[in-house]
Image (cartoon, rainbow, N blue to C red; front, side, top):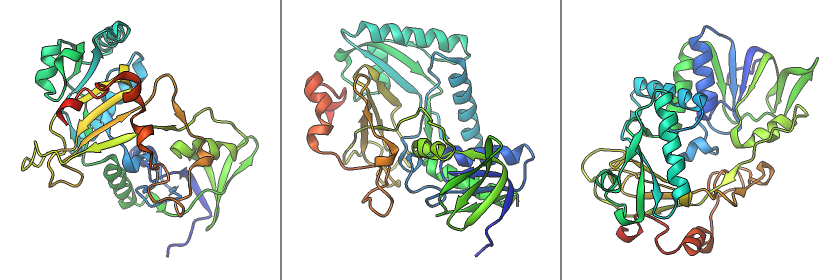
Length: 331
């Protein structure tokens, strides 16, 4: 085994996720060296949200920074050969005029920020996403540059770390949790791990849903909280059999119902042959304190996942009626 370093210019805590991996890539691209990355899990992560992300990229937002970073990300992933520019829809249901007004604002913002998003009619939505019930929607927006990181952001995270290690400027240590941060003169000076303490000029925290716990090591209360959201897969779905595609239809957001939907492409691909449907509650989000997430050794699934009962999954359907899923009649 490699000797664990006692000093580095930069330590990245949480290298295994897409954020930590991207930070390492961009630091090295800009000339930094002697970078050490650690992660409590495997690298790429097998426990964090990157390990089961839906991998969407949408350029629709009302603030310039979010739009700029998304456009940069799309270009970045595409240059790596890991982006499917399938386009994305956001729809407003009949009767939800407030959501339609919000969609119009997003289109206006998008035009001001340099995106190609524009309004579409119910008929155009149906033509782009045949699973939807045209009579249920009053309109929406079409983002032609939206798409999916393929085959998964977890794969891309691993690729970024692998390429960074090849430069000799990054040393990566999996299964190496940060036990505490070394603080001196009002700033982080290093990280304590089970393998030893490593001093650093700069410590970068990329621990995602566990970020609040990491910040607490420095005496800070980071105001972020993981959101638990149900996710259901329907299948088998064979529409794209034999195509080799990771995704066939465009992405779909039905945010007035807190829902999103995508297919998983060719049944012969790694995760193909399914319809993925998930949602986040806008008005009563499922907050989960990171201290309540199970340890990797205790969890049947990734600690960032857990099983839900059927009544928990179907709660929005009970609240909004049997048409909660715009494609439900077709599945």
